[in-house]
Amino acid sequence: MKSLIHKEEDGTIKLTITLPFTTVKTARDQVLESMAKEINLPGFRKGKAPASIAESNFNPQAIRENVLKKILPDAYMNALTEHSLKPIVSPKIQLEEAEEDKDWVFHALTCELPTVDLGDYKKNVKAVNVQSKIAVSGKPVGEDEQKKPTMDQMVKAVLEGTKATVPHILIEQETDRLLSQLLEDVKKLGLSLDQYLGSTKRSPEDLRNEYAKRAEEDIKLEFVLQKIAETEKVTVDPKEVDEAIAKAKDPKEKENLETNRYLLTSILRQQKTLDLLTNL
Image (tube, rainbow, N blue to C red):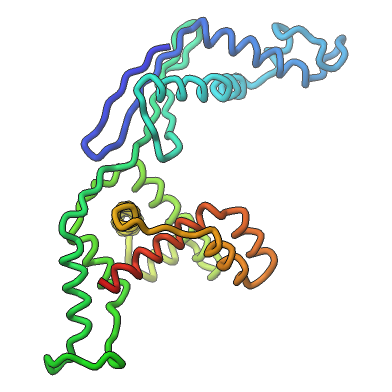
């Protein structure tokens, strides 16, 4: 196996991996042998037909997919080790060549944690906080009258003072997730996507561009808050996680939170980071 790496300006990493035909053939023989054990053929007991005979009864596409499932994970992991990569997202696989009696070539798109430049984010945040303490008349308000900045104001202040390039592969995946959620919500309303688009006077391209922009901002904010949390040493005690789980509305929600403690911890850390910024 050999692999080549190409890093795009936005941080997306493209691995081109070539698998020798000998490796592919070995995997294919093993797949056929395994598939043959699950088939009934006239004149043979179940699973006893030779793979060479059973092969004609299988869908070629199914054989190829099973071969890929067998060899791609190890090939991808070997490429990561070879290039010392630490991806933060599952790869997007693109098969380029998979012909009989030839090497197979595929691309794996992934990315690592992007570099975040926090800049003078505190200056922007403090400016928003100070502004929230000034009344319309221009006079300072009393402590009981003070209002904390809105979440939108805080997010805008944080993003304006920081820099982080979000890899396209992350934006694409998050956009797909957001659109999938939107489609589910639209269906619950008894509408088709075309009806929804017509009512909002948007084209499919407009909708995807809108959600792609939203996805980019959401992901950038997540990385920025993560970096600020590291810089400010914001941590979440296990007891805080337990308390959050204990507040669950029902057993099902409690079980879900317990299963996703890591994600819950991340959310709590993010919220504590926003609270810290609000009080600068």
